[in-house]
Length: 87
Image 1: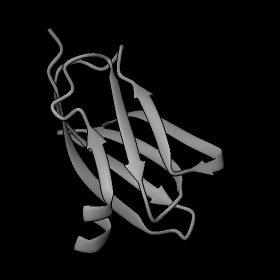
Image 2 (image 1 turned 45 degrees about the vertical axis):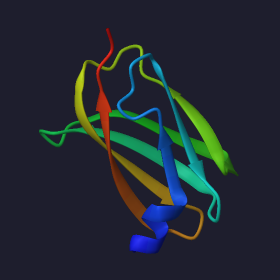
Image 3 (image 1 turned 60 degrees about the horizontal axis):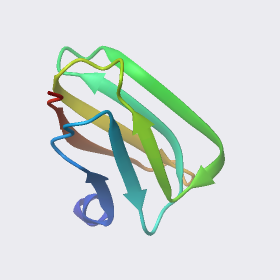
């Protein structure tokens, strides 16, 4: 599991503007969920065509700490923390 997380890049983190890039070298992303610290899902994105790299728009996401849950095409899940602190 640690290996998966090492191969997953999320930047910029903390996110100071409204765009965050998610990059997974070895796996293909099929779904992304953004969950706030109370456990509420604030964003979900499914990909019909799996991708190694994608960008999320966080315009409507308030500042705070979130968990990005990423599901890959082989049904593996990995989670990373993201801090949103827009000016």
